[in-house]
Length: 52
Image 1 (cartoon, helix red, strand yellow):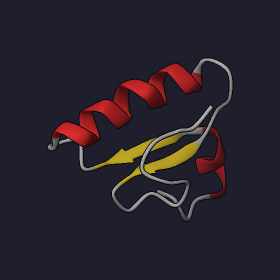
Image 2 (cartoon, one colour; image 1 turned 45 degrees about the vertical axis):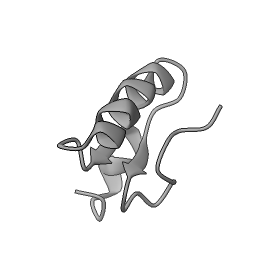
Image 3 (cartoon, helix red, strand yellow; image 1 turned 120 degrees about the vertical axis):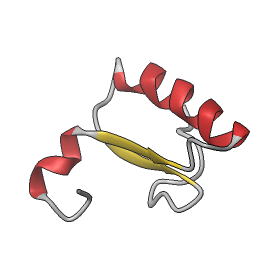
Image 4 (cartoon, helix red, strand yellow; image 1 turned 90 degrees about the vertical axis):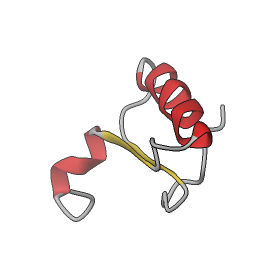
């Protein structure tokens, strides 16, 4: 999905089967209200958690 050009408007989180991944999911949903896109989690290109 990350290779697709439309992925810039979709946020992804990997590792949601871990406690850290679940936290990243909640923070990513919160961030998605103000800024679309991002790749978060253990292997996320934008870091483990959305900052700011």
